[in-house]
Image (cartoon, rainbow, N blue to C red; front, side, top):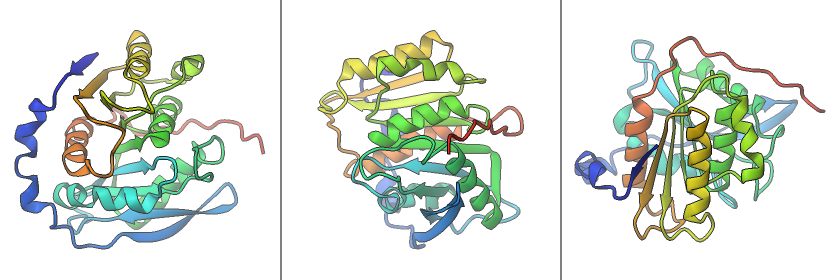
Length: 251
């Protein structure tokens, strides 16, 4: 497990962000995706660089409690336009929690398929990102669909130790990166470290970044953080064609 106590390593990468932070002028689109017989709201951003000759990586993003997919996509726009990333962010079924099977894994496959029908997507470069409640969900979905997503990154999230066994479902040791503030009052540092250790002991490549004096706040920290997240995600690629593992639907 790589533990970075400071973001100094990312500082060089972030130095030019202010030059293009306002450059993304494309709009965030609200659309629907049919999943498990229901229309689900999904917000999408497609950068101007996407073309048949340049298939784009795709980030599927999960908002925190009380948040929305729209906010997540808006916060990703500057990096997405600059780096040529498609971003899709569904709204959760419940305002507070993400839940399975309502919100995944099937919804995630349906979102990826819908995006692939509308835009050229690189199938080996589809990623998960989540904040807070969305981070917890991203860790779970990364384990269940480790051969479908290339990597997962989360901010301010951990898995309760009694649910660590979900990591054992992973058919592939999917790379995972976790960012956590040392002053996060919702996810204590030790609980996040415990999650990272549980992943590491199972053979997952894990990067844990502890941000000094940072709180639970994601929305006001996104320009720097999202670029650092993308630096991690962009280095990951599925070794084979994606395989979606189907689970019995209890409906």
